[in-house]
Image (cartoon, rainbow, N blue to C red; front, side, top):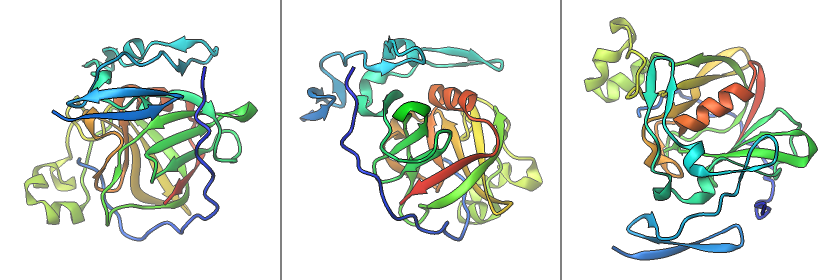
Length: 243
């Protein structure tokens, strides 16, 4: 199995930005990956990616299995058309590029990766979507608590910018959990100095947003990936975000 070692650690962490927002939510090209070149046409891989994703036992896992349909919490999460996603954003175990202590979550905002640092010099890496310009954030905090199939309540500032969201405001009880809920199947809530930052790690039904800067500040993962991360991460986990 090949590991991605091309990334070097950032040595500077900026202070967590002020302000809060919650998330809503025919040319050919080639992308270098894992020592080979994967060719794309109209956004679809024209050759099958190698099964390069490592499971907990070190065995390789087929992406079709990893991103297949899941029955969870009374919902059926659709299979992800993984062939339409750059394979670099598939969940996979890599050589740890962060230098952080095992158990730490590191979000590499510029590269659109989230790492969960593991013992032995490795990390589980996930592709993420991040905040648009003006909503990006960085710093250090903790995962104060976690929620399966969370309700989504946009903050008042977001409702003011997007009045169509008033039906999901706190006074109206928020948006019920479900397949189209912007927080997806799981949410991990980030606190700093005991205060809710209103930023989250969360699932998303919009698999095509992974690898892009589209959300209003929060870090989104594919629903299959956030379920995997949720099961690996206890509350009070340290999180570091590189800007």
